[in-house]
Length: 236
Length: 236
Ligand SMILES: CC1=C(/C=C/C(C)=C/C=C/C(C)=C/C=O)C(C)(C)CCC1
Ligand SMILES: CC1=C(/C=C/C(C)=C/C=C/C(C)=C/C=O)C(C)(C)CCC1
Image (cartoon, rainbow over all chains, first blue to last red; front, side):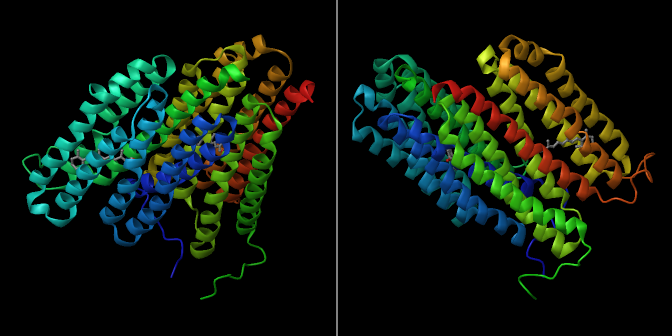
């Protein structure tokens, strides 16, 4: 037996799993090695960015091997990853807005909504695929509640109060949630049965998820990194 | 089976895979452990040099095992590596020229060209080898566009504006791209069918690629390291 399996040259899902694994590892090294350049407050935010990509790196390592061994979606591991990383992204929103007096209740609210979004998504994708549409709808409602909270709700007001580079970074992260996160429900529709069947039929769910993860985890982290850089500049 | 396989004493491809793996690991340790000697700006550049060799170290580890198990080119993994490291080298050009006011659009242009170069190269080498000549030609055009941009285009003007040790380092990196990177298309010709068949027929593609990677990844990083050293001198 071979410990390093041969990959089909046109296995693009496998390709994105491999690229994803290494991109997450490199991003983690980047965040961990740079965090000490910043003041304590921003250091924590950059550290959390590193935790998000590090958690993903470990799960991508599994998912990659799972894909090679079974040529089937590693749904279980995917959701294990999300259930840890998405709440951490909610923590990032809170950490950023703390300068404007954000309360822990804002963080709790976002985390609660994200857990609803992911648990219902998992039920629809893996446990009750025959009613994937209903579960996806509930999940989508929780997703929109998150979008509402950060774009127009309490988080938006805090960002406005903070102003300057914090407000600008918050706005970019809002776009990540609105556009970058929207790739996930598309992947879900490509991989579950429903009225939407056929629209994305030709494409693999995992390619969507892998691309979305790279954009959202690394991109999100880089926005926080550059915010930390801007905030620390006057000191040097 | 043995977990530490025996190597044929004249397996020169295996030899270069082993040397490459460890050279990349040692180079990563070197860059990561020295980066804190420099000011923030140069630290980031040295950190990115370390990321490039770190990414390569992980992929060489696979590729070495893949070679031992299958005695066949690990093309798939090779391109996974390049698609991450070559864009990071483009980031290095940008980071160096930032002192002279380089814009993100320069970085985006170089990254875009490098992705075209690699995707078309992969298609020719692995997916459609029967038309390797055409794909190689397209890839080569993108390669020359990169050479043009850094030798004579916008990047060259910025390097001139920066002057001093930045300009000197930029010039050395330009030579790496013109001469060091040119080893890759030679490897490609040695490993794919085409009018050029026979010229490099006796030599293995992987020996070319492994030697080129060691020169370009570690050498490139060392140029940046010594630039950082020169720029930080007055402070010590
Ligand atoms: C709306 C919706 C979904 C949304 C998933 C999202 C938005 C996941 C975000 C994951 C992130 C950001 C991971 C990165 O760390 C599901 C569960 C696919 C189910 C279908 C409906
Ligand atoms: C022109 C050309 C190629 C160029 C490849 C290059 C230039 C790769 C550079 C890789 C580096 C620098 C890796 C180090 O990190 C291919 C794809 C072989 C296909 C044939 C034509």
